[in-house]
Amino acid sequence: MPKSSAALAFHYLARAILLSGFALLIVHLVRSGNLNLYIAPRMQLIVKLSALALYAVAAHQLYSAIRAFFDKDKHGGPDCDCMHEMPATWGKSLLFYGWFALPLIIGYVVPDGLLGSSMASAKGVQFAPQTTVVSEPRTARSETVPTPPSVELPSPSASAPAAEPDPAEQGSAGTDATEQEATEQENRKPDAPVALDRELSPEELDLLFPSDNFTEAYAAYGKKLFLRDVVQVTPKRFIETLTTVDLYRDAFLGKTIEISGFVYRESGMGPQQFGISRFAVACCSADASPYGVMATFAGADELETDEWVSVTGTLGTTMYNDIEIIQIDIADFVRIPAPGDPYVSPDFDFGLEQLE
Image 1 (cartoon, rainbow, N blue to C red):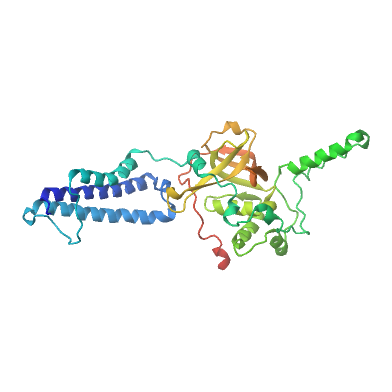
Image 2: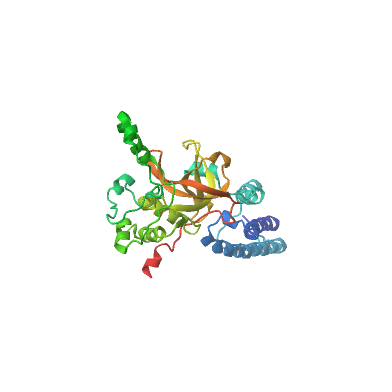
């Protein structure tokens, strides 16, 4: 049934306004520097180009609206012969265009904000990223990871040898004291970075970082990290670094690590524990997944949840939710503002350097 020229002009004009509104929203996010709160860096060029396409289609819809309004003798305005029916009533029209207008209005009205602890709690922070690489439990794998017999990693407490016990003071409590000392030694967290007095040979590194087809890239990266004085978890390889350290945690125990992220807490954590987390985004914020590392700090109550910090500490392990995970014993921290690009993305070039 042919529609009046005014009705057709309204439909074309409504579409032009909506399309240009989405294009202007993208431009606004680009100019304000907030596009990275919604779109991963590698996808931003496509989104920016889509704004140009939206402008072009909006201009065509505006042209069609002008033709429909002034070409009254056509009785129906421009026709593409593609059998696309316009909504028959005003109610259907408002409902139809309202579905597109609603997200546009939300985009302009709701202020831009970072994903934080509330979303991380809903999705669950990944404190054991190695599970994304290997499916078998860590306890099963640890039995197959050999420690090189010729590599003796010095104990963090080797620089301060314990005083020899006085046999006269041991008495009958000697056995209990020995058992207690063994328990304390087992539960003790490394408090100083491991420092080797010599470089390991390639064969020794291969023994320390065994690999298969799935973990070859992580093993190669782990060897590079192991030879550094400080393991720096950079945004570019945030996921890959944490996965490597967790996968070969025995080699990194006692190492100094630097990492930044927002403070995350949940009910199962102790009073001195919190997570240092960041959201990993592959495409857009809709697929964001929180990754992080557990941290322990005597002054944890000084830090607010969702506050951004940069910390330096020593790597150790702890049990959390019946799973052994890596943990940082914080030695120093600095409060920092949320970075302009707060999210991290998988490094799709990771491991390719081995093929060069």
